[in-house]
Length: 200
Image 1 (cartoon, rainbow, N blue to C red):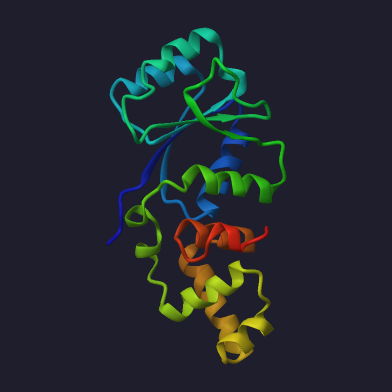
Image 2: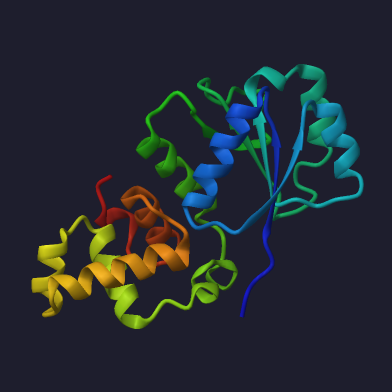
C-alpha cells in the first residue's frame, strides 16, 4: 500500500540550495511533497492553514523576531520538526530546532545527517512498501549497502555475477536511486541494515 507523502517545507536563500537538498532527500528514498518559501513571514502565514512534518530553515533567515513567531508552533504537533540549515550549531535561543543540516560537509556526511533527521519516520510510512522489491532484491540491496562488491555478493548469495548485476539494475530502476550512498541511506531508513553496520 502506498503511503501519503511526507510534507516538507524549505525556507532557503537560493534555488540551487533548494534543488540540492530536495535531491539528497529523494535520493535517500524519502517520498515527499515540497513547499518552498523565500522568507519566514510567508512560512508563518502558510502554517496557519497547513501542517507539514519537517521545516528546513536556513540560518540566514533566523532572527530573534522570526524565532518568536515560530516558537508558537513549536510543540503544537509531535510530528513537526524544525531543522536549521547551515554550518552554525543550534544556540540556546534556537531550541525549537531539533537538528542541524550542515551543508558545508561532503555528500556522504550530509546524507548521514539526513538519515538522523528522518530516522523517526515509522516503517509503515516508508517507501519500501511502494517499490515492489522482491526478497532477493532486498537481500542484494542489503549487501550493496554493507559495501560488498558484485563479486562478493555473488559468492555470498551463491548466484552468478550476471544475476547480481541484473538485480542491481532492477533495484535502481524501482527505487530511482543511482548512487551507492543513496542506496545505503535507503537501506538504513527502511530497516534493511542497522546504521551501526555501515561506514560511509
